[in-house]
Image (cartoon, rainbow, N blue to C red; front, side, top):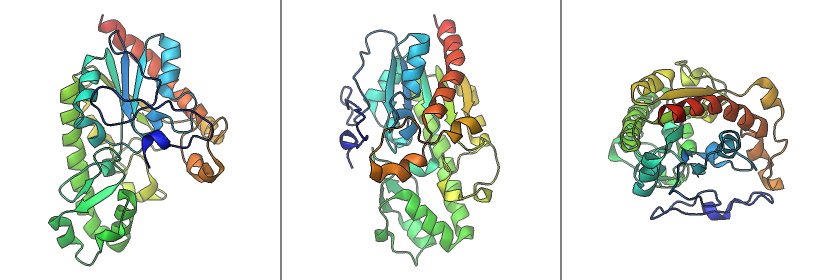
Length: 282
């Protein structure tokens, strides 16, 4: 599925591209020749099924252009190897980076699609040696593959999780090094940011962002301006899909996403932090 053909149930995403980037972002296209705040992240930042996602809500409050570089099903790999977007974030007054899952990046065990990071491309000989009884040609999506490997052998799967975590921290440091220190990390999730073992949570393979711990975020704190933890309230979560736009066949997918009220709460938490960050940079 191409980003420009996402069915928004009547919601127009006005897909656009910037410079030489091959990623289609949510439009309308914004000018980058005057001060702006950049937002990069996955489906939540993009605002799939959401009329006014976090970047739009923040822009309304602080009255400064907010450029949405969110990428549906995107991970760190969608951005770190994109010179156009890295340059745009480097030139922004501040960049908000949504924390994305460790499953969405290429590593020593498997490779993902360079832009649609939820797509599994190929496995390495190392992974084949660990799971020599598995036919990896059966998999199209990384989460499906990882869930199958975990179900087959939780003990062996610990090796995979450790590799993904190490690769994620290294890739994040690479990306943040390209952007610079004027970055705010955003944890926008139903999940608590903690070091609780991922497999002790309900439906562990459905956790988002997957495999990320508080310790991993702590390893990045000295190279960013701030970390905002936006866990939706029970009241916001209870609103479900109210106010979202989606076709009937996407009702289940929409119900699993963070809704309109969740985006409003996250934006409200970001606004004062961004105001302080902008003030210190001028």
